[in-house]
Image (tube, rainbow, N blue to C red; front, side, top):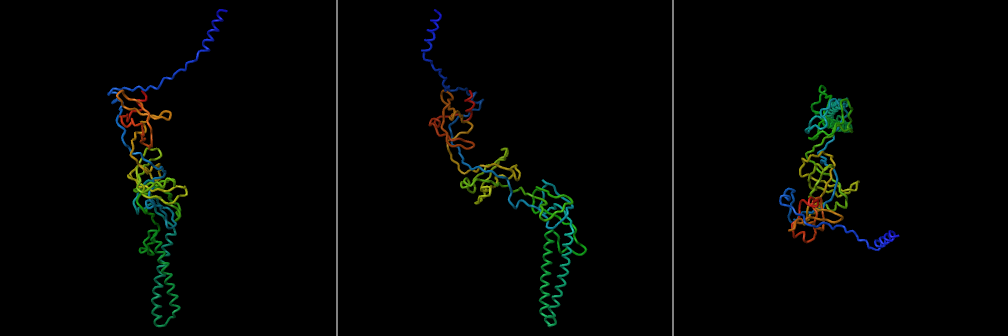
Length: 363
């Protein structure tokens, strides 16, 4: 009974006593003190917040390309079987260099037709001259003379057309005789550059509609970018472009040279940019991501990677007489390098840690 009374009194005492809340230890705001040697060893940089440029930009994607006159598809002007292919993909070539040779009966027949047209033209010219004299002497009728004159016009047209066709396949019509008919022709490059594609092989029948070679001259690279129409209104000629490849390893710079006023089928606006350095190690057709700088303001700002973020609050360390103290800051605009600092006013009146905030935060 004695022990039961003690237990009941013990229960009543603790039941009536108000529990005391366990206080969480406040955040340690004491200053961090470092020796000059520690500051130097950890490469801490201290100073007042300076002005930096906060840039507004429009994002774009596109390709590294060349103008139309710096690319060429090589076709034959007449049917031909490939006898020899002179180049390989990736090979550098000069304008006029022979890429392949072809042979075909059509090549021979065209020269035969030229010689026949030439002979007929000569014959009719002589006959026209003879009939002209007879007409003066009224020995032939005017009807016969006009008919002959029409035949001469037709013959001259046929002769000149075949002559032009021969020139198109690089055969000199002035050198064609019955004993010098050419059996093969050459395909030559219309531009200097690099062989991008070879679509033929020995023995293949090549027709005019088939592309034999594709040549690219990479000496004038440019950017072909796609920008959404709502953002394109912020663009203007001469704005700076920063771009990189997919992996971000290769970067470059350029400026806007042309802006297409029309919206494409992809619902984007085409922007043509010239490169600052055309030796950028990217290939024609490589995909690029770009930022076009449309505005730039000078504001008090620090590097993005020096701002400590915690639960939607932002901090930096200030250098005080007591050491390095963590203070909350107010942020403004930011770009890919800097973040604008708006306050508190104390932050502009004292020196802060410009490099090494995360090191101090980890102590």
